[in-house]
Amino acid sequence: MALDIEKIKSDLTEDLKAALSLEALEAVRIKYLGKKGMLQDIYAGLATASIEEKKLIGKSANEIKLLAETLISAQKETLGAQQKSGDAIDVTIPGARYSLGTKHLINQTVEEICDVFECLGFVIQRGPEIESEFHNFSALNIPLDHPSRDSFDTFYLDQEDPDAKGRYLLLRSHTSPGQVRVMKQFKPPMAVIIPGKVYRPDAVDASHSFMFHQIEGLLVDKQVSFADLKGLLTAFCKQYFGEDVKMRFRPHFFPFTEPSAEVDIQSNIFKGRAGKWLEILGCGMVHPKVFESAGYPRGEYSGLAFGMGVERIAMLKHGIGDIRTFVENDTRFLKQF
Picture 1 (spheres, rainbow, N blue to C red):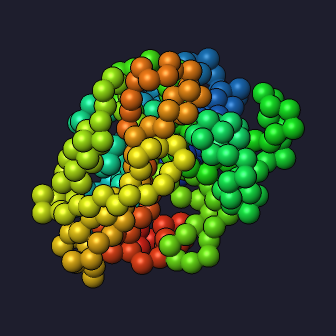
Picture 2 (picture 1 turned 180 degrees about the horizontal axis):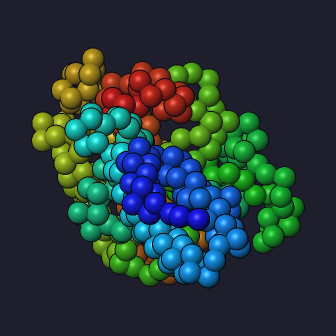
């Protein structure tokens, strides 16, 4: 049995050159090194060979095996690197565009308003959306026979208030309960801004919704006056709506402030409403009964409070005619902001 080792090496080299994929390379490995491959045939033929032939053939077969393993391993690394290179990102190809989300206009408006008041020394506080009748009504000097306490104007829950037998919890109808909660938790001086969702069964037209957002403001200290309130709100309006804004305070009634007022503004930034007086918020001096509900000594402190609807501010500033567009998730609308 004679081996032409040079021919076998030449054939192996040619087969490896032709193996341009990992699958083809595996076929070459099986041809030479597999259980039924060429080397196994050589080893099987040693049984009939003489002792001298066994030495020569065995040495040549081992040499072929070592060469085949080395060349096949090197070729495998080369093909693997080429495949990875082919799978890599081609930076010269234009990339796919991914749509990046933005903050919702309501969130933008809340942050913009809060930023103005934070610059004026206010601190942001939060209150629960599920409230008790005490915090939502009684503590704010809203009597039991007030229309707002009727089930037609407030979302009551089928859950009894653990602190008031026979009374039920509700979804807060305004952010004003935060006034009492903050005053019960902290002592003056304080200046807080309280943003959040509120709920009312009121969706009769394009300017009302079952759920909307409000921002409540409260400042409590000694000798706070209505002049402080006017100065504070004037500073806010000029900062938020522009220096050319005009303001007026109209007498109004709120159970939790006395005296009370509504604020109207006039500005050229309002699309289609330039020159018109537009209501933006309600305000007043904190009522003594609210201080009493919070446990403050009578006559020791005074304070100012105000509240505004976020959707109304956004609708006025951006010329939006229907409050429902804020929650319809129409990307054509949302992408404008």
